Image (tube, rainbow, N blue to C red; front, side):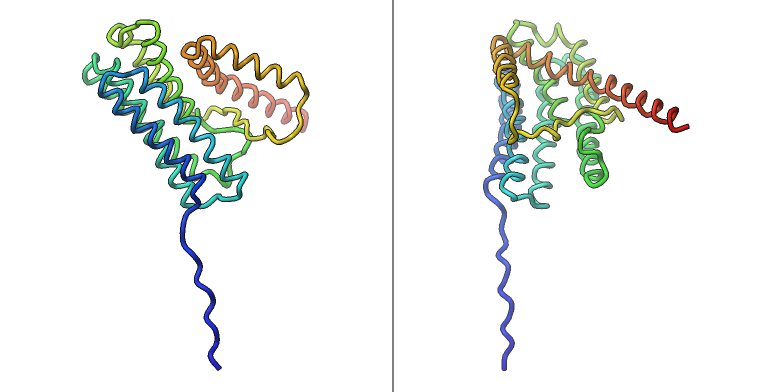
Length: 248
């Protein structure tokens, strides 16, 4: 009697989360092409749009239980384009190109730092404390770089005049990505749980403030998040020292 063969597993990928990842990749690609055409405000806005797409793909995958190794790798490659290569090229074309080789070097350092940040994150998924990121997340670094370009375009600041501020901002963002500073990940927040009514009011007020001047507010918001890393790391170290003293 012939033994029936087990049914073949259907190979494929989940459409919904990977669709958002593709949208993130498209926004990064569009940012580069827009910057090449001198449309720097559109380029910067596209990088922020890529951040929204990147935030949605992971949450959708977790909510729909469609997390796969393919999706994780695709998301990492998309992040490298949208938050590594695209911000570096946009900043270079807007301002850093006026510094010749120095500007080119700063753009490369930012791109390389993003690659190193993503590689370290991928290798520490199983051991990293989910409450904190090690190093500034690449989307936040991209938001600072793109936010500066968007802010400059909105306030009529030419890239040539901002070239020294641009190189300092780009280099600092790159160094923070590969640093050992701890950043709060916000992954512990339960968006499906109940919250006090005052929280909804606070969120509405925050959105209203951001929408009054999104270019300035977003730049300040992500700059404050970047500055929070050293402060949080110092606080955590002090707490560890205090625990050791009590235990001793």
